[in-house]
View (cartoon, rainbow, N blue to C red):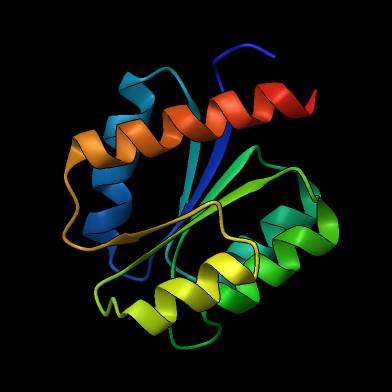
Length: 127
């Protein structure tokens, strides 16, 4: 596997998706951004992504539900959950249910880059 990954970003705040897309494109990844969890899940039915970055709190579907959907389709996809409502309980629940990592908003670009690089390395180990 090369270091280029397909990444789906899901956040109901458009500015978060735009910021992440810009950062991830600079890193050489292929990125799709969604603000609607139902559309993102529909897209995941069409294509398998290497990494999914999802907000936890959204109206139609939360990030834990999105993660369950991802894992029904692909066990190797790395899911990174982000939230502006970080609590220790939520982080623990996310990680025990299979999230690769949990990041609190506002996050720094370096933090996302480091987490993505770790996910890429983990994906290499799965091939």
